[in-house]
Length: 365
Image (cartoon, rainbow, N blue to C red; front, side, top):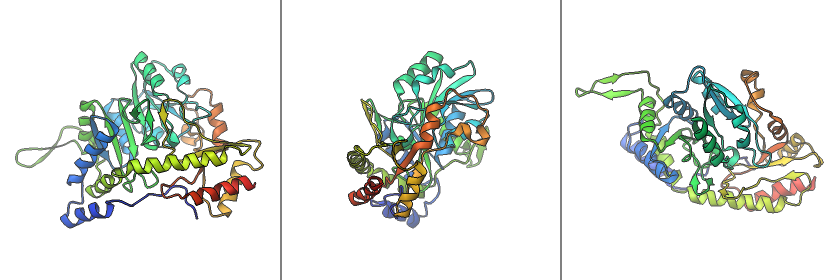
């Protein structure tokens, strides 16, 4: 089986995790927690980074430190994994869904402004599958209406927008390190920001708002959250981060081979890379158009029969039962690409022969 996207464990992961076990620093007080935060902030280009138990926790913390809650609205993609949308509801706010771009699959920044009301407090662009959202436009709108910007940069880790790493442009950036992400800690997440006060607030909330008094007692001034990352996972994150540039290079090389071999296949639309951006191609994503002999799902089944795992695009969140009735704009593009989109194998360990096998099946049809 050629898997869709599995982790690459080929660096100092065993060494660093063993050190945690040998020294008994396995929980959230170990040195690797601080090191992972510092190394990640330096890589992203942010002043502050805060590790969390997962990416969802990072997104919820972002909303809470910005004071977003009951009665507020957050404009967000519908073409996304459901996690960022759920966190909006966690804090009592309401999601407002915006349509996607057909060529890049990400939030259509040109359609955001029409959805703004007096209740709108933030925009949450999601850089799905690796391509950056048009952040200049998003930041322009946010400035005009005094809105916060929270980037869900999980799938865009390693992508660059006009010289800046994703997750360092908005007020807050959020990342997940789940097993299929560019770098992984098994579980875990990260919040990044250039506002040190927001970063300190996020750290405070994520560690149960714990203050240690002179006599060693714990004192809590407000409700906090146990969103800490254990030292074991942070150790793995440090090892993974050491190899991130190599992973990015491989991802882009593989995408280039896919593009070359699929460019002449009628009925297959390949992903793009807009000017002044660098697409990490976290997942290599195509559209199966009406001209192709098989439907999208039929192609998925055909690939599976030949030992190749693939996956549909995300189903639109505005069509999910918890969010039916939520406010949204015209969702024609989102609805269309969700029915035509397919993600092909994209692991860092993918070989040229693996890609050629996938392409040969697509072409044989």
